[in-house]
Image 1 (tube, rainbow, N blue to C red):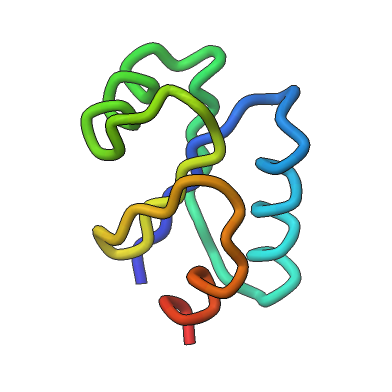
Image 2: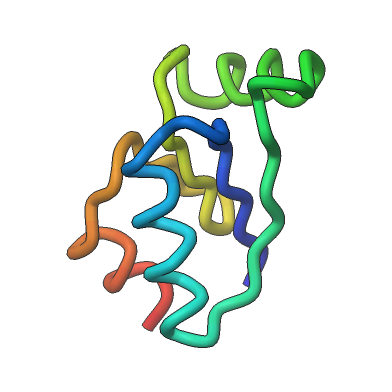
Length: 75
């Protein structure tokens, strides 16, 4: 499973999403779009959104912390 979490340091929902995945023992790659311009452009290209968090779970894009959708994709 390939998971990327696009986030910023100041986003509380980003922290919730990362903590949730970590708590489930799920490995993910974090891209801090606040400091990584290429990562930010990649996120916008994938999601059409500039807000965070954006999760890419095996090509499925989740905008925001949608716990039910995350669960359905990681189970």
